[in-house]
Length: 246
Image 1 (cartoon, rainbow, N blue to C red):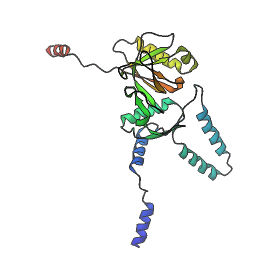
Image 2: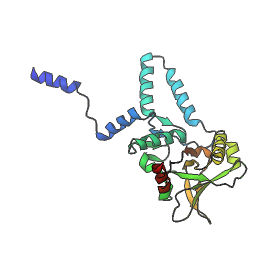
Image 3: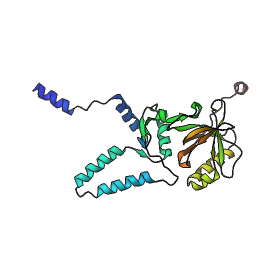
Image 4: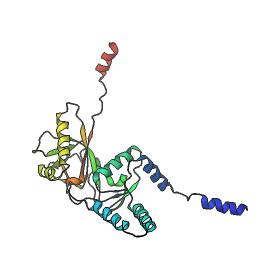
Protein backbone atom coordinates (compact mmCIF):
# COMPACT_ATOMS: atom_id res chain seq x y z
CA UNK A 1 0.00 0.00 0.00
CA UNK A 2 2.75 2.44 0.91
CA UNK A 3 4.57 1.57 -2.30
CA UNK A 4 1.42 2.23 -4.33
CA UNK A 5 0.95 5.61 -2.62
CA UNK A 6 4.58 6.49 -3.22
CA UNK A 7 4.27 5.61 -6.90
CA UNK A 8 1.07 7.64 -7.15
CA UNK A 9 2.73 10.65 -5.52
CA UNK A 10 5.69 10.28 -7.88
CA UNK A 11 3.37 10.29 -10.88
CA UNK A 12 1.44 13.29 -9.59
CA UNK A 13 4.53 15.27 -8.58
CA UNK A 14 5.62 17.92 -11.09
CA UNK A 15 8.69 17.16 -13.14
CA UNK A 16 11.89 18.75 -11.81
CA UNK A 17 12.61 22.14 -13.32
CA UNK A 18 16.17 23.37 -13.73
CA UNK A 19 17.23 26.86 -12.67
CA UNK A 20 17.28 28.19 -16.24
CA UNK A 21 13.68 27.12 -16.78
CA UNK A 22 12.68 28.64 -13.42
CA UNK A 23 14.25 31.94 -14.44
CA UNK A 24 12.47 31.82 -17.79
CA UNK A 25 9.13 31.28 -16.07
CA UNK A 26 9.77 34.15 -13.64
CA UNK A 27 10.62 36.47 -16.51
CA UNK A 28 7.58 35.33 -18.49
CA UNK A 29 5.32 36.24 -15.57
CA UNK A 30 6.89 39.68 -15.15
CA UNK A 31 7.67 40.77 -18.72
CA UNK A 32 4.86 42.07 -20.91
CA UNK A 33 6.03 39.86 -23.78
CA UNK A 34 9.07 37.63 -23.52
CA UNK A 35 10.57 37.40 -27.01
CA UNK A 36 12.13 34.02 -27.74
CA UNK A 37 12.66 34.42 -31.49
CA UNK A 38 13.56 37.32 -33.76
CA UNK A 39 12.95 37.31 -37.49
CA UNK A 40 15.04 40.16 -38.87
CA UNK A 41 13.18 42.15 -41.55
CA UNK A 42 15.22 42.43 -44.75
CA UNK A 43 13.54 45.66 -45.88
CA UNK A 44 11.22 48.35 -44.57
CA UNK A 45 8.18 46.70 -46.11
CA UNK A 46 9.11 43.12 -45.18
CA UNK A 47 6.17 41.30 -43.58
CA UNK A 48 7.25 37.77 -44.42
CA UNK A 49 7.36 36.68 -40.79
CA UNK A 50 3.72 37.54 -40.17
CA UNK A 51 2.48 36.12 -43.48
CA UNK A 52 4.31 32.83 -42.87
CA UNK A 53 2.61 32.45 -39.48
CA UNK A 54 -0.81 33.28 -40.92
CA UNK A 55 -0.47 30.82 -43.81
CA UNK A 56 0.62 28.01 -41.48
CA UNK A 57 -2.33 28.58 -39.15
CA UNK A 58 -4.70 28.68 -42.13
CA UNK A 59 -3.28 25.35 -43.30
CA UNK A 60 -3.83 23.76 -39.88
CA UNK A 61 -7.40 25.05 -39.73
CA UNK A 62 -8.21 22.99 -42.82
CA UNK A 63 -7.66 19.72 -40.94
CA UNK A 64 -11.02 17.89 -40.94
CA UNK A 65 -10.63 16.35 -37.47
CA UNK A 66 -11.18 18.95 -34.65
CA UNK A 67 -8.91 17.03 -32.27
CA UNK A 68 -6.17 16.94 -34.89
CA UNK A 69 -6.56 20.69 -35.44
CA UNK A 70 -6.27 21.47 -31.72
CA UNK A 71 -3.26 19.20 -31.31
CA UNK A 72 -1.50 20.68 -34.36
CA UNK A 73 -2.18 24.26 -33.25
CA UNK A 74 -0.82 23.57 -29.76
CA UNK A 75 2.33 22.02 -31.19
CA UNK A 76 2.80 24.87 -33.65
CA UNK A 77 2.34 27.60 -31.04
CA UNK A 78 4.63 25.77 -28.61
CA UNK A 79 7.35 25.60 -31.25
CA UNK A 80 6.78 29.17 -32.38
CA UNK A 81 7.41 30.81 -29.03
CA UNK A 82 6.99 34.57 -28.82
CA UNK A 83 8.31 35.54 -32.24
CA UNK A 84 9.11 39.17 -32.96
CA UNK A 85 9.40 40.49 -36.50
CA UNK A 86 10.45 43.99 -35.45
CA UNK A 87 13.38 45.37 -33.51
CA UNK A 88 10.92 47.50 -31.49
CA UNK A 89 9.48 44.41 -29.80
CA UNK A 90 12.92 43.01 -29.01
CA UNK A 91 14.10 46.33 -27.56
CA UNK A 92 11.01 46.59 -25.34
CA UNK A 93 11.69 43.10 -24.04
CA UNK A 94 15.37 43.92 -23.45
CA UNK A 95 14.54 47.06 -21.46
CA UNK A 96 12.10 45.18 -19.24
CA UNK A 97 14.52 42.29 -18.67
CA UNK A 98 17.29 44.76 -17.86
CA UNK A 99 15.14 46.35 -15.16
CA UNK A 100 14.47 42.86 -13.76
CA UNK A 101 18.15 41.82 -13.98
CA UNK A 102 17.11 38.89 -16.19
CA UNK A 103 19.35 39.46 -19.21
CA UNK A 104 20.42 35.81 -19.12
CA UNK A 105 17.20 34.93 -20.98
CA UNK A 106 17.85 33.52 -24.44
CA UNK A 107 16.29 34.13 -27.83
CA UNK A 108 16.91 32.80 -31.31
CA UNK A 109 17.77 35.05 -34.24
CA UNK A 110 16.82 33.77 -37.68
CA UNK A 111 19.94 32.74 -39.56
CA UNK A 112 22.26 33.76 -36.70
CA UNK A 113 21.83 31.42 -33.75
CA UNK A 114 20.86 31.62 -30.08
CA UNK A 115 21.95 34.48 -27.82
CA UNK A 116 21.28 35.72 -24.34
CA UNK A 117 19.99 39.29 -24.24
CA UNK A 118 23.23 40.22 -22.48
CA UNK A 119 25.28 38.79 -25.36
CA UNK A 120 23.20 40.27 -28.18
CA UNK A 121 22.84 43.84 -26.88
CA UNK A 122 26.16 45.67 -27.00
CA UNK A 123 26.75 49.15 -25.62
CA UNK A 124 28.62 51.53 -27.91
CA UNK A 125 31.32 52.12 -25.29
CA UNK A 126 32.40 48.49 -25.88
CA UNK A 127 33.15 49.22 -29.53
CA UNK A 128 32.58 47.06 -32.62
CA UNK A 129 32.34 43.29 -32.69
CA UNK A 130 32.03 40.64 -35.37
CA UNK A 131 28.80 38.75 -35.86
CA UNK A 132 25.27 39.67 -34.86
CA UNK A 133 24.76 42.49 -32.37
CA UNK A 134 22.18 45.05 -31.37
CA UNK A 135 24.26 48.13 -30.58
CA UNK A 136 22.85 50.77 -28.28
CA UNK A 137 23.82 53.90 -26.42
CA UNK A 138 22.75 57.37 -25.39
CA UNK A 139 23.04 60.05 -28.07
CA UNK A 140 22.20 63.68 -28.72
CA UNK A 141 21.08 65.25 -32.01
CA UNK A 142 23.58 67.57 -33.66
CA UNK A 143 22.22 71.03 -34.39
CA UNK A 144 23.08 70.75 -38.09
CA UNK A 145 20.20 69.16 -39.99
CA UNK A 146 20.11 67.62 -43.45
CA UNK A 147 16.58 68.47 -44.54
CA UNK A 148 14.49 66.14 -42.41
CA UNK A 149 17.56 63.98 -41.89
CA UNK A 150 19.68 64.18 -38.78
CA UNK A 151 22.86 63.02 -37.07
CA UNK A 152 23.03 61.64 -33.55
CA UNK A 153 26.31 61.85 -31.65
CA UNK A 154 26.73 59.21 -28.97
CA UNK A 155 27.66 60.29 -25.48
CA UNK A 156 30.32 57.59 -25.07
CA UNK A 157 33.19 57.63 -27.60
CA UNK A 158 35.21 54.59 -28.63
CA UNK A 159 39.01 54.81 -28.42
CA UNK A 160 38.70 58.56 -27.89
CA UNK A 161 36.88 58.99 -31.21
CA UNK A 162 33.24 60.08 -31.47
CA UNK A 163 30.49 57.74 -32.65
CA UNK A 164 27.69 59.07 -34.84
CA UNK A 165 24.67 57.67 -36.63
CA UNK A 166 23.37 59.42 -39.75
CA UNK A 167 19.74 59.09 -40.82
CA UNK A 168 19.24 60.45 -44.32
CA UNK A 169 16.13 62.25 -45.63
CA UNK A 170 15.70 59.56 -48.30
CA UNK A 171 15.68 56.71 -45.77
CA UNK A 172 13.13 58.57 -43.64
CA UNK A 173 10.93 59.22 -46.66
CA UNK A 174 11.02 55.55 -47.73
CA UNK A 175 10.31 54.23 -44.23
CA UNK A 176 6.66 54.72 -43.13
CA UNK A 177 7.44 55.14 -39.38
CA UNK A 178 10.15 57.67 -40.29
CA UNK A 179 7.73 60.52 -39.59
CA UNK A 180 7.77 59.57 -35.90
CA UNK A 181 11.56 59.80 -35.85
CA UNK A 182 11.46 63.26 -37.43
CA UNK A 183 8.88 64.43 -34.89
CA UNK A 184 10.97 63.02 -32.05
CA UNK A 185 14.09 64.95 -33.10
CA UNK A 186 12.08 68.14 -33.75
CA UNK A 187 10.57 67.99 -30.26
CA UNK A 188 13.95 67.41 -28.61
CA UNK A 189 15.41 70.42 -30.43
CA UNK A 190 12.45 72.57 -29.35
CA UNK A 191 12.79 71.56 -25.69
CA UNK A 192 14.68 74.01 -23.45
CA UNK A 193 17.68 72.86 -21.45
CA UNK A 194 18.14 70.40 -19.92
CA UNK A 195 17.10 68.55 -23.06
CA UNK A 196 16.17 64.88 -23.19
CA UNK A 197 18.47 62.62 -25.12
CA UNK A 198 17.95 59.61 -27.36
CA UNK A 199 18.78 56.00 -26.65
CA UNK A 200 19.49 54.55 -30.07
CA UNK A 201 19.44 50.84 -30.90
CA UNK A 202 20.45 49.37 -34.22
CA UNK A 203 21.31 46.08 -35.88
CA UNK A 204 24.44 46.51 -37.94
CA UNK A 205 27.96 47.57 -37.12
CA UNK A 206 30.50 50.31 -36.51
CA UNK A 207 32.97 51.44 -39.15
CA UNK A 208 35.93 53.73 -38.70
CA UNK A 209 35.95 57.01 -40.64
CA UNK A 210 38.15 60.07 -40.88
CA UNK A 211 36.32 61.89 -38.10
CA UNK A 212 35.37 58.94 -35.91
CA UNK A 213 33.13 55.89 -35.89
CA UNK A 214 29.97 55.59 -37.97
CA UNK A 215 27.00 53.39 -37.13
CA UNK A 216 26.03 51.26 -40.13
CA UNK A 217 22.69 49.62 -40.87
CA UNK A 218 20.90 48.38 -43.99
CA UNK A 219 17.41 49.73 -43.33
CA UNK A 220 15.64 51.96 -40.83
CA UNK A 221 13.66 48.88 -39.83
CA UNK A 222 16.89 47.97 -38.02
CA UNK A 223 16.93 51.21 -36.00
CA UNK A 224 14.95 52.09 -32.87
CA UNK A 225 15.05 55.44 -31.09
CA UNK A 226 13.76 56.01 -27.56
CA UNK A 227 13.54 59.40 -25.84
CA UNK A 228 15.13 59.49 -22.38
CA UNK A 229 14.19 62.35 -20.02
CA UNK A 230 17.09 64.37 -18.61
CA UNK A 231 18.20 63.47 -15.13
CA UNK A 232 17.31 65.93 -12.41
CA UNK A 233 20.38 67.93 -11.52
CA UNK A 234 21.42 68.15 -7.90
CA UNK A 235 21.35 71.74 -6.59
CA UNK A 236 24.70 73.47 -6.37
CA UNK A 237 26.24 74.09 -2.95
CA UNK A 238 25.45 77.81 -3.21
CA UNK A 239 21.82 77.13 -4.12
CA UNK A 240 21.49 74.62 -1.29
CA UNK A 241 22.98 77.10 1.19
CA UNK A 242 20.61 79.81 -0.05
CA UNK A 243 17.65 77.48 0.48
CA UNK A 244 18.76 76.76 4.06
CA UNK A 245 19.09 80.45 4.95
CA UNK A 246 15.57 81.28 3.75
